[in-house]
Image (cartoon, rainbow, N blue to C red):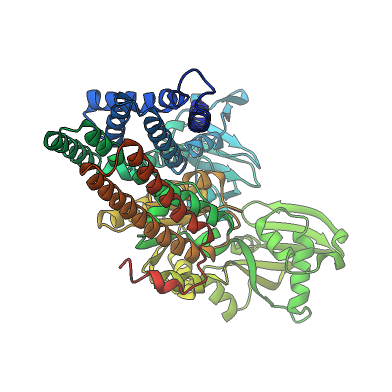
Length: 624
């Protein structure tokens, strides 16, 4: 809240100062004093104060030091308007630059809210709800369907399906039985079970995730203002030039004019104006850019890490194939029976099956006595027959035998999810489900490679599925079975080898990697709020096809910034020479100084019309 108020206060000061400048220039007689003094006080005094504090406490020489010198010098010789416009432009530039830096910590706060604040502890007197901080190791807890698991532990009694997307990013629930581990922050979807506490809240998987996000955020380097990079040298050069000019010419006005034209207003505007224009352009494409630093680094990106689920793939199970194992049912009839029964279930796999048929034309009301079999499947009565749908555990429990089938063996070998359909203890068919690759992924990977950025697949899924997806999309390097800390390790290794790394993801488990990467890019439509908060850039419509355009825009933006900097420094150099020989006075110097700032703004504004429909490879040579 304080940061928001400070932002509004700064914006208000800028608006009042601009009005004062206009009044001071057009209506100098409106007030009994020069209205430009208002701008000097509102915008100039904070700059001088900040420069003095930085020099005294940290001996930190930034562009503000040179600006302060120019302000004070202009006031001393009576050029209040020149001092005022310098103060306003510098404050506006700093404000624009601040808008391009993402300092949001909302993601960490949302992670904290994922954990329940109470737990169901089983005692000698029955069940008791206690605060989470009172849960101790070896306590026995009960978790009912729909609840979030409070701490890490092991199932002692019962079984269920657990949504572990928080940790792995994989949307398909994992079946859990007695002896299996469960983790805090994951969701118990169906059964009720009792668990033994293995780790207290402070040591749980969710708290570990929070610490990963915090540490990754701390490792992210803050943006350094363009003018501040050369501030020390600019200060030395300006003071030296001014002093030498004064010693040679004995003309204090020339020395002061040099200080005025040396003031790096255009240099300060060089980066934020280009980035603001690029942000406006990207918005038209459904891309939200939150970090100007991220956009600059994207222009130099060398490695792009793709999470699989929800990024390269759609992130939800779909029916890949289905077969009949019965002489009396066609494969279509088997699928319809499965859909009729699954229509009454809330399981993601069931919804995927239902979506493949026209359910409105089927007798869904004929289903009776639906019963979920936690960790195995479900059972119902349909047309006087007992229908069971489930996995291999259900077949084993029923001691059901099926004849050898090469198609099913291939599905299982490929790690696809296989649902078997039984009718009165006879297996009549099977359905294979998987997470499908986005059709545009292949072309996108090719275009990214043409832009000198190597794509890498980074996923929590198993090695076999990861390699299959990589093969389909043309990705050469794969890292599978990755937990959040594994993704951080891969990114750190690349950064330690001096690669600029981008990370694209959509899940909560991607948040630490999105924070640590030089550029974090989140899928905005179906991505988690925490991933979106952690990212520098958000693809609001989950359109991965915008990625090549985004890289092209980033490279064009960087080129614009570089030209802005050369323009600003070149104009300043010419103005200094003219001031030194007496051609430019303080007012004329301030005018030339303003021309540089306007030129930078106009050049940056051209980015608003930039189109990436040209050959995307046109930028690749320039930045090799």
